[in-house]
Image (cartoon, rainbow over all chains, first blue to last red; front, side, top):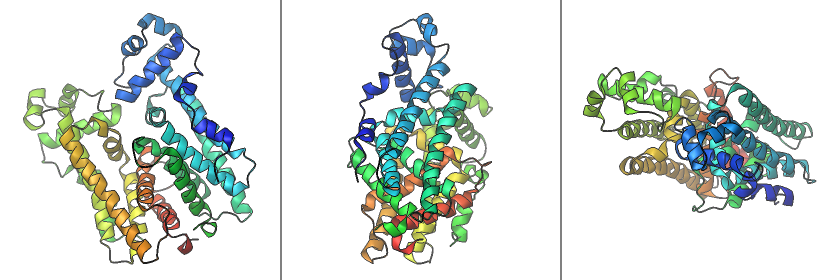
Length: 214
Length: 214
């Protein structure tokens, strides 16, 4: 029932693992500083001067790496979407039966959003501020995630293991359910990310294959 | 299967109906202006001067009605939460059997978020900027909505019509699923708000009572 060890490592990854993908030094400090400002007040209310000063750099030093705050948002958004995509890819690569693998993946995707709600919120809620090239990259990753889930549902329907009224609508609904965890999840609340993942795994099973649930 | 006429009227209400609850004139213009700015750039990036000038008023005239932009957010957030709460109250007052009434309510709540995504986004994503009194009011409305859904599920479980692993977790998950519609719903997309409502009604039925679904 549990996610694979590989998926689990991605879902529970320390935030430091997320930041370690950016080159150490000024570049990483700038991305982290931008993230902290975007998470606190949003992209529109953040100035490049604040980002630079939070990172302990001058605005001129910042421009050596990032031409604008939109470039910082693009770096964050690409990295956040790639991390979310990795959860799905890794979980769907498990060697378990197809229906189990898919519902485990939905559970893992929910748990990832509970483990990383601040990164997920910046990534989800600031999309409108991306410039066209970055938006196109991120939109491709988003379509890729939904497409992978829809493809799995299509296969399950074809072999009689799932029964849904609308494949792409259900794929989007299941991802949407998981993404919204980042809006309300409270690490001090009653349930752990893994408990949320387990509940959402069960709900996904019911949505996909009511005859197998209950 | 369809929502009651009363619920339908609330779900499909014209945006003008939403604004008509504020006294006509400067007060309504200020709330609408604040909404437009918050929806476009967020609360933190909006200045009271911009709100007043969008409403065609001086900042001094604004202060006659609203002491701060936080007071404008409070008015919007209270009204938006009351509107969402109304959907649930009205739909749960229908005379249909309890399980049908509850899944119709989830469908109506999803459709409301598809009809009013901009209002819903301001209401959902700016909560952290509410001052304590307004936050307390809104938190009570939020607990009220989740509590009403959880109470209905509890009754359904007690009479054997629903079977869920975690009543409050499922109540929150179903509301969360509907709320997230406001993040991604595109009026130009493939599905109408009513089609989203119908799909989510079916998913709610599966989550609550898999034996009745499919």
